[in-house]
Length: 183
Image (cartoon, rainbow, N blue to C red):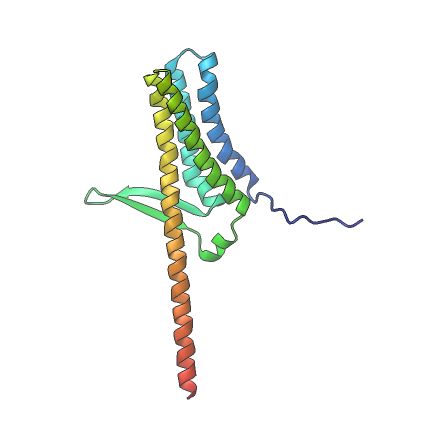
């Protein structure tokens, strides 16, 4: 019997995808469920922020690099000014990135921030300023990754466009030189 091959693409990096989602879900789930089972605000704060910090680190340094081929960081130069640094794979490697991996990366990045915003609104409605602090820290970590990777993606697209225009220009000039050298 012949096997029918599906054109549906699977995740290229399922373990990375799992941990990308797992840390986000862990920090959100712990924060939401801890209100039911834990009375200590300090424990809720420390564990939730710790899980969100793990998520921040994994996304920034591991899953961002593996799933979308991007990495960013921020440095302070000698004048004391903030400088964004970006790394991306070369054009060929970026073109070969798995679309499902990329989709999962970007959507979970945005959905997590939206979830933290809803939890912030909920804390405001319930007049819980202390829990708003927890949500604020987690939301800032999520937004930092969104801003960093969005800037990195724009920088990568700009680099690809520059590379393409330089390649076309060099090909055109070499073609013109060879055409005139024949004459």
